[in-house]
Amino acid sequence: MCKGMSTLVCAKCNSVFGEVAPEYRCENCGVAGSLEYKVDYKSIGKVSFSGDFTFWRYRDLLPSVKNFVSLHEGGTPLYRAERLAKHIRLSRLYLKDETRNPTNSFRDRAAALMVSKMLDLGYAAAICASSGNMGASLAAYCAKYGISCHIVIPRHVDVGKLAQMIIYDAAVEEYGETVDESIKRAMRISEETGWYQATSAINPLTIEAQKTIAFEIFEQIGVPDVVIVPMGSGGTIYSIWKGFLELNDLGIIREKPRLIGVQSSGCSPIVNAYLGREEIIEKPMTRATSILMVNPLRRDLALKAIRESGGLAVAVSDHEILEAEQEMARMEGLFAEPASSATIAALKRLLNESVIGVNESVVCLITGSGLKATDVLKAMSRKRKMILVEADLSTKEKILRIIAGKETYGYEIWKMLGKTMTKAAVYQHLNELKSKDLISVRIKNGRKYFTITEKGKKVLKAIEEVKVLLS
Image 1: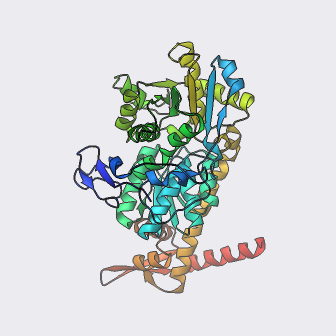
Image 2: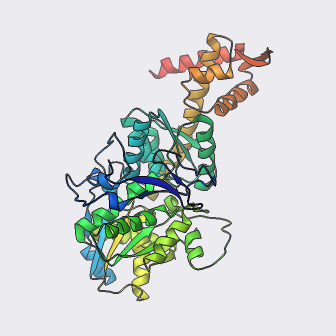
Image 3: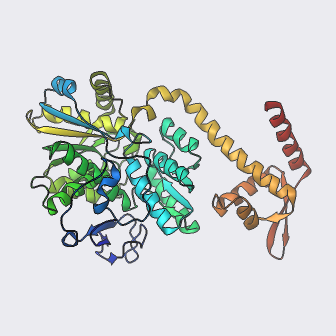
């Protein structure tokens, strides 16, 4: 556990809370995603990193947990990209390869810490809004430790990431055009069900987990001149900055890097804010779906990291991102997702503009694998809808079988399903079954009771016959 005293502080109203509550929303001002862990460095004393080169090597600087969940995350390579550096005319380029984590993205660090906390607090279910990587990571870690995982995804999600969520047996719900809308849905579900809120953009453990990337970079090469980071919610770049700040506050380092945040020009709200532009993003779109966020909840923290470090924010086009993705794969054998490739695209631009010097050392954060987001996987896009439809039909079949057994009501059905979805979702399924005349309804003592119809019985019998034929 953390050696120092740790508290949660609201960045908006400066309220101070204990380490275990509130979960993600300030109890005083009500702002979601404003909470941050603060450590009393004086109480820590001397820190020495010891043990295997993994995520939990840095447990002394993480919030306290009793359970140490792990799929062997962290300790990722920092490659010296010599061929690519020569191609773009930079003396020292390093790629921090987070694709080497268990589910092939940097979000495994946050999933490990969150699930550890869930086990400490006795949670049996988690809810998370995600555009891909966090959902895949959380699904894997929840599967390993027997926690029910529920993911709310926006319309545009990379098929490879969706496939991970499904194979890890997460319950997936599509809601909204962008992850902004999905987050609102996840917060409503969390408040209704009491499930653990694991959305990376608002859970304060995310920043704590991801700051370990800075610790690793320092141990691998010292302090670089520049670190380039893709930005969605803004939390990742602040995580990296916080990591270097803590190393500085502990007296371990004296210098800190400049941080450069990158977004796609198709959706660049943090870059717009950095440049002082008030622009309404009417049709946000980019291949880099993992950083597609219209209203970043940690925008102010991202700007704080950029300005305090003497860095900047830059937007690059999808064409530049694709070109960088191909160059990195061709010259370094590293297949990165578009959001990660944006860091190389930005580096090329800033070198040409002499914003970054040719003799500076630069680290580009490669957050996730291109195998999750490659255009080749678009051939599977039709299967995506089929998977979601099949999951929907499976739930309806379960409900129909419950009602076929006896006349019952919505709350009882919800309990018999194992409380694996919201009550509202159960009633939506019931309404759809009624609209197809598969069940009927009668009111008794003010409560709706559901009974299977003859048509419903025929549908169940047909399903059984199909299963026999396919077995």
